[in-house]
Length: 366
Ligand code: SF4
Image (cartoon, rainbow, N blue to C red):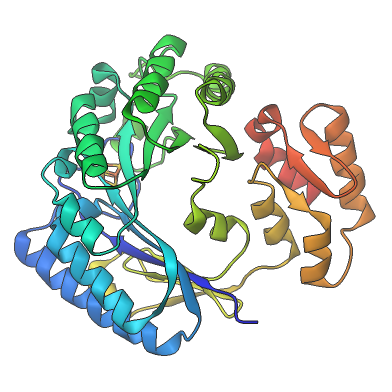
């Protein structure tokens, strides 16, 4: 049976650059936004001709897709519908920055069949937002979510960040309360990573960044406080009201296939991984770089264990036509004794404490 695929479109524009950001994005003029939209539509047609599989989810991310405005976003979705076989009820997400989100025509997006929004809040605390170099205030996010809800969007996610300079356990809880108060159904909560080459990397010794122990405390406290507020953890950094888990991202974690279009966008298709380089010019010139084959046993285990439901032993056996190796099972059993993993006869998963050291454990297991 043909498995559905996901489709990712990357929008490499942002109004200004946040101090921690390593994503491929830069400011763009109106002319550049138009030219990029046209190019993306050409590439959508190109990939649509090569992919007969049904598409179960579309995700427009960035950068800041909302800087394109509703009309350009709708044009892109129209091109997707024309060139791909979009399943009925497909999840169609667009990322929104609260600053450009306020002025967005959500009625137009809803009419075009967008049905999920991911809004980059990061924190409801103004001092923390300023430290991150964000250009919006918490109130902008609240107004954005409210306008979207009034236009009929029910499935809305807010991003929160852990480990921001000046953050305290109390301010973190206030941010969670803020999200819950907005009535959103999904929260992504990532630990801040200081990437080389970003302004934060230069400021790493001058700004009051929480240390690793503090970050771990924030993470565990976020997991339990989010649960209290009705957001169930379904992935290392993702929490949802049951039934509102991100289907697009879950496809990645279940090692499903997808096409990514745009500079820096990655694809996994017909067992091969490949990507567009981090350059708009290279994208316009159709440069694609092969990343070898993907979806092997190690990768499958690593991705499955990001999910709270974890690694299903039967699904592994069905996919690879052999059971999980006794060596791997023994190691998982040992980590379960330490309270870092949980295991029954059918599956294994990380505990919240285990998620914190999952990279180390995974490099030992596989
Ligand atoms: S808005 Fe998002 S993509 Fe743009 S600079 Fe900030 S973090 Fe990066």
